[in-house]
Each structure stands twice: as structure tokens, then as C-alpha cells.
Length: 583
Image 1: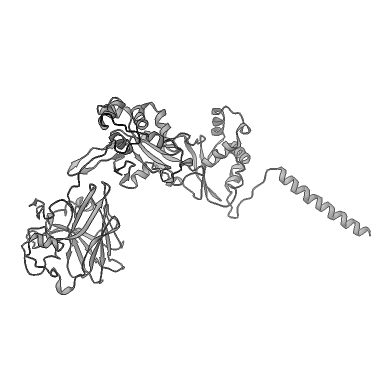
Image 2 (image 1 turned 90 degrees about the vertical axis):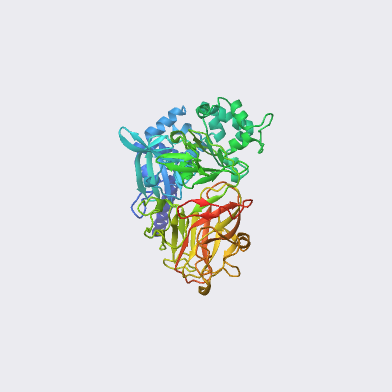
């Protein structure tokens, strides 16, 4: 009996110890373990360095976010050191973390954490960091010179003191100031900045201020939740003779008109042209050549990088070079609750042109032009170039295109005497074969056009389907049988211009007309590919795609014409080997 009592007493003691242990565990701070791989997780690392991070550790404990930052995952966290948190508390009139509202501290932590992505400084660029924070706002990064040394800066607010600390569940960067999220809409940023008084008044007069004054998290139309605005300061307007809002309205609005929410008013269109329905920092702007504005005509803003200067609307249209406007980079990339604000050093405006003929020499490409020893030098050819090029991409990375300038006296006739040669253009997927090739066009003015294309066949018998901005054009070049290469089925090569055009062909060179081979399928003439309705004045994409049998050798392409449908489609009639054009 005594042994049984002792045994029961021992079990009671063990049970009490277990219960006490549970109680004590619930009353004191959890001690987090080291991961199996030997690296501390984020919370453990912060806890193990109270000298630098005790205040941020208190924030994590108060918010309860210490738990998920200890858990498995992939995070990028920007941790302010104790000096940074002390400065932040002082700026808010606080002396301890306990004096802060818990929700405000949760927002603070979420603004310093990027979830599901580990981002080293090697990926920091002069613009937004690639993934938004848990607060659903992007951070920006850049490089500044501090005491003769380059340092990363985040949001223009905090220097990175220690970077790329690799931890078990992510990467950590130590910063010298607490990051503070945007609290103003784009409209408010402009309204609060005294250098934008004219632009601000124009936004209010058109009603676009209201459009830009809705935080993204309460926007009812998610396609218009975020905006990018290119604002022009008063100094820009004064430099072009516009000293006031009244002068700006006089320039763009008809007398007595009301620009408020009026898409037919010139001032409304002008202001809407400065706004994009996207959240684009400068790196995003440079990631593609143009962006559609919210003006009713959906006119685009183009961009180009010249050295370190970003130029908007620096366009060559119909042979006229427009200067465009430079972006004021130090005063751009300003985040807001519904997008980003950029500042300009010049004026941008909608350029209105009627549909206008474009004669496009496909052989005039940047990669060829810079080779001065071969570009338009008779008898010279380039080495094979692979995809991508500046304005050309094609289906197989092993495929090649070359530039070929014909020898003096050569019997073939090309504009400027040169062509692009696509090697192994065929309807098959295989090493070195090009079954489709994309060309980025010059700027095309919006309107309706007929598209005329040229190419040379050698021994291939694939047909061609053309696509404009991904949409198939109406007419397809038929598959060519080896027995009739150079012949136009069912039509005489000596037929008159209207007869040829009715059959989908026209002459475009001064090559002698012959009833022998090497005529219609040998770039003596153009093929009518179809009609396109261009809705935005911009660069577009024309694709050649092989169809039909797979046998092929080389295909040379010379020019493409976009002729407004109201134009006489036979003119201009001749594209000569010296580059001149004649009727």
C-alpha cells in the first residue's frame, strides 16, 4: 500500500509540474528556436540583438507579428534600429512603444515587410522595389552619395546601414529611419505643392482632381484604382508663355465652354493626357516604349532613355523631330495612396494628325545602321544576328537574320538596294528555323490603312500569314509550288495597275516587267495583306508567320507600306535603289 501511495504522489507531482510549466510558458516570452539549417529566423535574429533592435522587437511583440516572422516563409524586411525608432517616437510625441495604438503599429510593421519574396540589394534599382509591401504600397530604392561613399536609400527616407542579412525565412536590411507610408492621394500631393498651382487648378476645373482623389483601397473601379500623373510645374508653363490657369484654359478651351467632365473639351483632353491608369514608377515607364493615357482618344505617351535622361514624346513623326519633355527625376517617383507622381521639365500635349502614309524600310534597323562598314555599302552583308534585336524578335533563338546590300549592277531591285534575309523561314519548329518574326513599326498615326508587304522567295514554298498587333490580316500569301515560283496565278504580270490591285498586287520598283520568272514573288511587286484600323498613335507590331509546307531556304523582305484607305493605292509608284521615291 505504501508503494502505491508513493507512486500516486509522484504522478501528482509530475502533473503539477507539467501544469505549472504550461502556465509559466503562457506568461513569459516565447523563446524561438534556430532552424535546422542553422540560420535564425527573423524574429530570433532581432531578439538576439537587443542593443540594436530592442525597440523594434517591442513593436513585434505588441502587434503579435513576432509569430509569423518566426514561421516558415520568404520575407524581405527593413528593420529600423533603435536610433531610428527613437527618432520616430520623438516625431510622434511619444516616449515609449506602449503609447502607440496597436493598429498603427501593425500598419508600420506591414509597411516594412515584403511577403513571398526575398530581395537582395542587387535587385534594387532607381525606382520601385519589384514587390509591394504587406501594406500594399511599393517601396522605392536608389543610390545616394554620403560622405564620399555610395549608399542605398529607401523611399528617399532611410539609408540602408547593413544589407542582405541572410536568415532562415528571408533577408533583412537594417535602416536608419522608420519608413512612413504615403497618406495623401495624388490629387492631394499636387494640391499641397505650391509649384503646381496652374496644373492643380486645371485638374479641379476638369473634374480630374476628383478622379485622382480616391485612395486605391476604397476605389469601386479596380481598373482605375491606381494612376500615374506627369505634372507640369508653374515654371514650365511660364517658360512657354502661360502665366496662369486662365491662360492655359484660353489655349485649350473654346470660349464659353465648360471643361468639367467634358471629353469634348480641349482642356479636359489635355489634362487627361497627363494621366495613366497604371501604377508606374520610372523603371516601369522605361520597361515599354509607350503608355495609353486616359484621355478619351486613348492617345499614348512615348518614352525613351537618352543617357540618364527620360524623355517623353520625343517622337519623329512624318520626318519632324518633336523635342518632347524631360522627366525631373529627383522630383519624381513620389508615392501616394493611389499611385505615383512624376514631375516634368517641359510640356507634353496631344499631337493631332490625319492618317498618314508610312513607307517602312525593314532593313533600316539600329543593329545594321551602326555597322557603317556594311550599311548601304554595295555588295556588303552582315553576320547573322539572333533574336531579340531592338525592333525585331523571332521564334527560334538559334535562328538568324542578316542585312544584305546588293552589289552594284545586281539584277534585283530593292529600295535602298538592301534587304533583311530570314534564314530557314519555314512552317516548322526546329533549331535554326524561323517560323514567325515580329517587327516593331515606326509610329503610326491612328486611322484606317491598307497594308502592302514585300518579300523574296528563293526555293521555299511556304505561304505567309500576317498579323498586326496579334490580329490576323485578311489576306494570306498562298503556298507557292516550286513549279510556279515567280508566277502570279491567274493574272498577267504585264497587266495594268488597277487590274493588279484588284488581284491584290501592285508594282513598287522600276524593275523591268518580264513574263519570265522572278517577278511577283521576287520582290518586284507588293502583296495586299489587308486593312488595319489603328486606334492609337503609337508603335505597333507586324508579324510574318510561315504557313503550309515546311520546305524553305531564305526569305528576303524589303518594305512595308501603310497607306490610308482614302489614298491612291498605286502611289508612290517607284521605290528606287538609290533611296529616292517617284510617281
